[in-house]
Image (cartoon, rainbow, N blue to C red; front, side, top):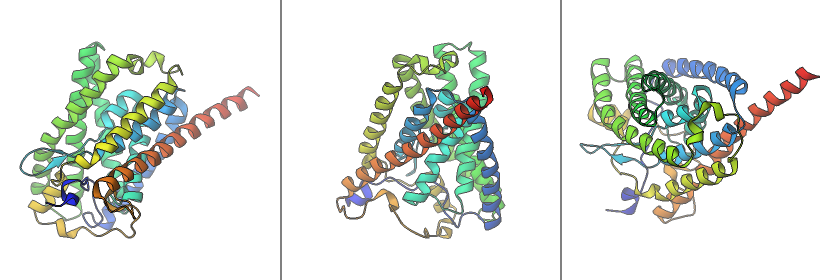
Length: 328
């Protein structure tokens, strides 16, 4: 079997063609409205230490999403990351982090369609984030904010974010006439219920690591502290780069959506990208498939970090500027 099949992250997001133009535009509008609100809310609530954290989280989630893991029946899943983002940052900064990841994937790597980008942002960056936030907040109150309660709450929140986001995708397919709801909903729910277990395990592992190494990141009362920002920078980016280096080991099986599309006969409705920059996580001029995936992944990590960190800096600078104006 050629290396290009063994060592290649699989496409993960809704491509153009799966959704109707009307449905795509509607979700572009919804996502744009929520993003405007998220920018304003983030400007009001963003703490100093969360500025670098937004950048490194976006980079790590991007790299983590390249590592598809095998599930069952010849399919695979991948990290969403909404739960860990919302636990560490809160809902509105998490929306911006997920939007940065999904947008860079579509614009630079042709992973997900441009017309469908609004729906992909809605499913992963809005539905995924707010479902994880609601579930985590409910459970963490029940568990009295204990360490083991954080782990259990994180697992359930992560599973829920994957499961409900998949239902949103299924309903979008049904509204577009691509696949009837009585087929799309159970098919997407069934496979993503299993993928959600992987999401939950990855999230709990990340939370366990954070509880052991930097428990202060999970304490809201310490959010304004800027202590350890250098460690967040270095440690987070190192993890992201390591994940990118491991990305050629991603499962070659189709992801949940692609598997459902193949099983139910609408895979051929997908349309090719209008342009190619780094398609399928490859870099022009590098023939070795393993090396090109690693280099493209590291480049993607840098781009996503720059976008998320730049947005965070801009919002924090805007807050500081407003406070100076108020004092004067």
